Image (cartoon, rainbow over all chains, first blue to last red; front, side, top):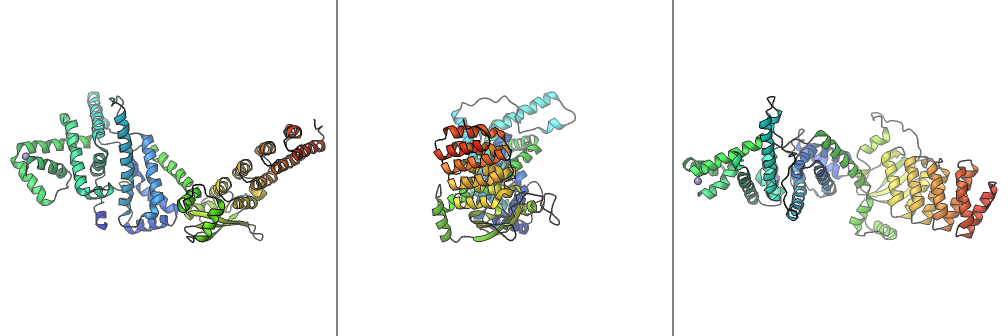
Length: 209
Length: 320
Ligand SMILES: [Zn+2]
């Protein structure tokens, strides 16, 4: 499993400089020994990256904050079980992945019960680069919002596992082998998930290209 | 390779997930197949679309809010020894005797000395400590929560130093020192009084807090909570004594009246009457007289009625 850590050089942790391995190991051991300050330092290393990911998955700030809390409480409670068989970040993101998958599954169940309603509101979390340009064009902005809405809708079409694989590969830049490990599945399954996700995005968004 | 097989490879190609040989095979196929070339262009278009409409970063206030919530949750987590009892002994509501005997059998931890000064007042800052004081600095050193306290086996004041010595059984050993000014220390005391299973330890905690400690609003709240809610009459009685001797506060008066009128134990009700009389004599609160009158007239216990009547006479109030 140690080999997997070499491939985790993507965007995790995306914010702040990742700690050197030895430094992080020392922090983890201190935290395992009950050192709250050490635990807080670990949290600070990863919390921005985790929040960004759970915000994309959750869609609303409140839900994201709930997932964020769930992740780090789980990490806190189970830290004593971490045996340094993988890198700490891999282990932590496995927790994140599980929390996100649970959330997506719950959401899916709710969606199945309710008839899908076209969402009229502004998409909250896809923003458009074009909006920030000085030469602001209302028509273009409208078009951008429409695209953002379509993107959100397309994301909802993905199964929980496809969505997580896509998030971790596309936005977090992780390798599929590591992603498979995080999702508790094989690299082959992760490949299939990514393929199906891109196929669904093609179907949903093909006419925009 | 068939075009269907190429489809999957094209998706992986876009993410650099193909081996060199696979990549060569895909590129060779695409060069000679119009259909797969279109697919590749389409996939690139999707990538471009996603890049143009990247998800927004979390707003800074969301990060701050989430961090604060987490801090609070972790604080609560550290305090929940009860949870630890449940997970370690598998008992939902641990019977004190059972827990204590289990503790003597299971040698999973170290006994640590935990010192705190049972007095209210400014704590001298240690060299290099922030303005929040030495105690706070010691606590934020990750200590208390890190103790993973599983049980408390002793709460005893040291007659020589006047310091409070609390012996804890914890997964990892550590020594803590802090005064009642420290919020976390207060939190421990409050937790012990409100939730710790062993009444003997709750009693010791009350003794250790003493009348000095009871002057602190947070500790006083815990005292009054114990007076009102503890299921052990001995603990309620001690909470009553400690609260009554502590710096006077309107909440104390209210709690004493409640105890005098509602406590299920006549001994506690009687002691509450005594305490009320003392407070009225000391000129603290004349409004307590009506409560004494109600007790003198209608308390179910004859002893409490007599005490209240005597008290009213002493105060120069006609009993009826
Ligand atoms: Zn082809």
